[in-house]
Length: 210
Image 1 (cartoon, rainbow, N blue to C red):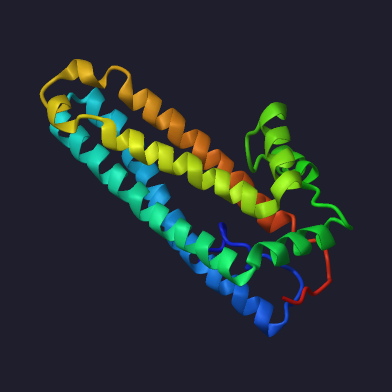
Image 2 (image 1 turned 30 degrees about the vertical axis):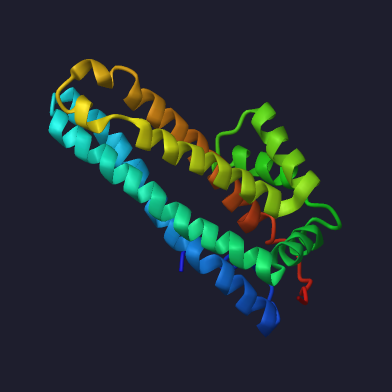
């Protein structure tokens, strides 16, 4: 199980057995999904290397691999989201975050601290958007937005005509930069959620019952 993306591993206080099992069921597909997503990012970064070397065939393969990895990530993330909704996880987790924050979610404060430590790069506007999303709808709304962005990105990867691009250098003039920019935006958002789940739950000794 992941030690950087999940909601449970970094927690410094014990949970009761039932709640611990709930976290484990939600976390497992997140770990697998994050592994797939990072593989997609690696392919998109290496795509630039292929194009610098004028290897259009390998570049085309990279895009196909990245698209497949994003789809695989979505399957896992959506599985986690479905399990979390079905089992009432989000209400439990939001309460853990509030307990750790002394009664409030402290999303902005957590991200500001993380930014100061060099753990995430967020401008003030982006930080505020994430904080407001948590306040309005908790972890469910925040993670739901992540899924929406990832679905849109997956669709855009599918729209790229890889067959035509394999023989036409001009097709690559904008796509690589746009793809890596979109990926990095989604990755940073997901990274922020992971940091909230890790640092945001580390400061309380209160157990939460489901």
